[in-house]
Image (cartoon, rainbow, N blue to C red; front, side, top):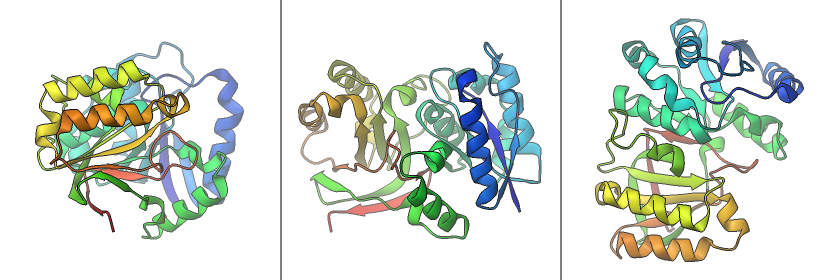
Length: 276
């Protein structure tokens, strides 16, 4: 049975989620994985060094095949200065996480070149659980069902490159730090749970001002949950298109983001997308 680490580098889980976590662990066991919990996932005010060490203990454990972070929120970037990057660079086990873990996944890419997976294990017990579990098990056996998603091209007809990015707010926490990924020739993926129309414009302006769009081979938009619910996504896309200019490929998928039906994507691995 494959052993997987369960860790929390971002905000601690609320006590009310203990039962939900037990349900997730039972699901992992049922599909053939042995979960090993690292650190106290519920510790309020847990020190960054302690959260980082819980992650590193799983990286150092040769019996662990993959690591799943089950937290999100605001605090993941606190651990970056406490990680043992040579150990992570020497490890082939991927870290899986989403939302605030965007800053850790991209820091791993920047500091080690190792790929990680933008995906939350909570989808395995969410509203799309049956399909998520089926496709996840397929991926464990070398398949790619969990990593397939549909795209709609808004500009251009093709883009190819390694993927960087994820949650737009959390990615931008890395700007100006040694953990910012090199975007040259890469597909820049952007999604969000809570960004308003004004926040979207501010984030896009910052990405433009630091040269992210000039460097990237293309931009792939995932879901923007709040913005779409407020009916502001089309205006936001128009603003982004004006910033990019007509020559930069721009595509959109409704299958990557914070939805329970979200697909997974490798941060740091090459994908090729085309309008056909």
